[in-house]
Amino acid sequence: MTPGCLYPVFSSSLFYISLPVNFLPLFHDLNGRPCLLVGGGSIACRKARLLISAGATIHLVSPYLCDEMLRIIAESSVTLEKRAFQPSDLEGMALVIAATDQPMVNQQVAELASKQQKPVNVVDQPELCTVIMPAIIDRSPIMVAVSSGGTAPVLARNIRTRLEGLLPQGLGRLAELSARFRQQVKMRFKHLSERRRFWEAVYDGEITESVLSGNTHTAEQLIRKKLQNPDKKDSGEVYLVGAGPGDPDLLTFKALRLMQKADIVLYDNLVSHEIVELCRRDAEFIYVGKKSCCHAVPQERINSMMIEFARDGKRVVRLKGGDPFIFGRGGEELEVLAAHDVPFQVVPGITAASGCASYAGIPLTHRDYAHSVRFITGHGKAGSTKMPWTELKDTQQTLVFYMGIKNLEKICQNLMAEGCSPERPVAIIHRGTTERQKTVTGTLATISRIAQKVQIEPPSLIVIGDVVRLHKNLDWYRPAEAYDLPLVQ
Ligand code: SAH
Image 1 (cartoon, rainbow, N blue to C red):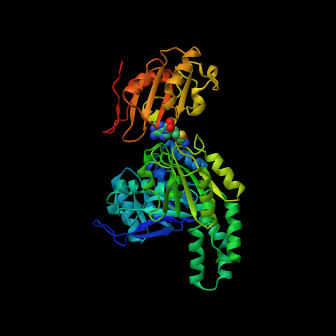
Image 2: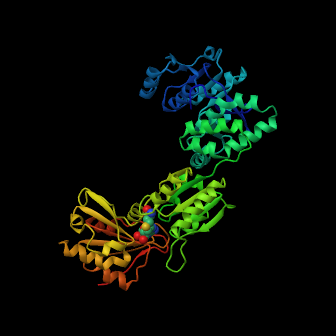
Image 3: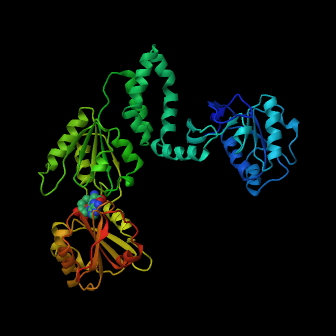
């Protein structure tokens, strides 16, 4: 909360309420106003911090003060009466909070305050409160307050946690930008309905997106342009979004937010069905993936589609498996967009190496086994002698091969030819992080025979190094369908 921000309270006109009561949500301006806080323990500290962040002047009354409260007093301008509560403490107070561990004291404070019609809150005793403290989501100056009317505070906090993820951190900046332009918008549009239409277009379009992605300067330029020419359509944009390795829970908040804004979704075959489903329902979905059985859309066509759609004012989500900048051709696609002046954003995703290794219980580095990790393409050149095989020999280095299943045998042979021990452990993780994850382990000498026998298919990741030994103990992910394939000797 920024100091001076309106402080959310829920207010009841009844005293000694019989639950449940429907509280009226109000936001209380406490900036510079005196508030009485009775109590000097850890709960009182929590309340003190909230009051301070709302800009209130705290009058603290308590014969006892915990260490944290002493710190708060030292850091802020709290006035302290180090003694027991007395009725005259209530004089002139805008809000009263009783936070002692003495039920009798709390009750006395509440009764006296209520008689004087002063808003009073007693911690954890809703029956003594005329105002209660909600769970707060703070995007100052935007505040969201959640209350269960004192019936289920843990549930209210649980709801708060869920909402936290939905509300971008930049919302406060958006409100501040709105405040800066409010007057100009009022001057420009005389009618309320015109103003409303203007702001709705701002909150739904590229200006908001620029603010949320941290580009406040661009947003200001755009809003000025929009004030001059309000009917001009927003220009489109491409969001290059990393969808992670498969588990939808591994998406970032930002990825999800942009996916839910999409007009067009271009997605690859590595992106799971559940993740595609999370995009805005009425978006247009275009599959551009590469699967051996399906005809792939050529890269040039994907590029030209992105350019055409964005120029037509559309928000295009280019969804890619894992991270778009790791073996994802993300860089190449962006170079084309940049050359055509199409605005874009990149959202990183969890790459297959991180996702698969975590879900298979194989740390990619470990102080005892590996001091570095290397991501390598196992496609094309991997089978040939053009790879820097000698650099891959280091036993303290974990090697992760993407797209390497078809070249598995050659990769192992080349490493052994370079002097790597045939006993060097290898894991193959198929469809990591999904319900269908399968892990198979072996050594450089045995893994290709094992993989052949159990018919491991793409998409699979090859992890080579001593860290693979940890899989036996750290393998924690066991959904119904995920399993370790039997070891074939
Ligand atoms: N950009 C992606 C990688 C694309 S290359 C990323 O950052 O993860 C495609 C290769 O990634 C596949 O051949 C496979 O080796 C690996 N891969 C991607 N998702 C995978 C998964 N869920 N399980 C195993 N391997 C995966």
